[in-house]
Length: 330
Image (cartoon, rainbow, N blue to C red; front, side):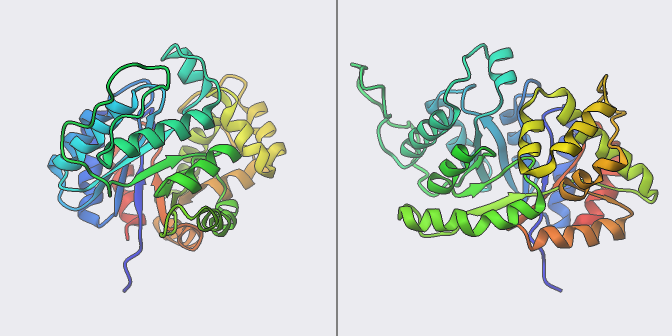
């Protein structure tokens, strides 16, 4: 039996450190390839990533993602090189432009030119990791310094990108593309084009690793599983600003997004609704049902991306987490 490439991804709303570490340990035991640990406005994910690295044996830990606005390129490079050492080389640095709501409402920074910022920070971090001196502002009179620990030129960098401009940055500069809310059919169609961009740019000899996947819940009661994934989808589309609703609508699901938003006038993270006339959104962005149904659904993702990422809704009880990971395991 051929092992599939599978990963696990959490949301920034999952802030239970004990559950996060326990989930990573089970994923490690079950043979998942990567464990993607997000960061939003709750836990400092780098501390949790350290604990996971020390308490697992095989799985690769991905910071998915660290905001390019929340840390300097120097801090990002130090963090990545340190986690690379602690994990024995089982670390991937994930970077992203985040959202206007989080950048301005939490970090108190202006959210301007996110694609240009992503390109600039990625290039500066890469330079430091390869042993170059820091790329300072041209107006600076300071002496540029190097990273004060061994260079890690092969440390992978994944970029979370959904807009056209940020996806272009990922194709040109990253080792992997880790998008959120890109439909299964769309991401499958984008893979060849992204690799053509890479080849034309002559920047990288290896194909871009595409890691994406559905919000996933397995339960003996398929209706319960649907309710759980629907609540998370509705929360993202109705309560997290306009960015995710716009991203999904631009992919051709505008009517479904409107129906979801109309059905959730007072969004709740635990009781969101995806009405029947918006079922296409669940079909493209989630995998739910009995364990057998989840396995069948994930077969479509296996052919669409390089590493299907099993997204777990925040606050999911441990029995549901274990059932889902075992159902989706490689």
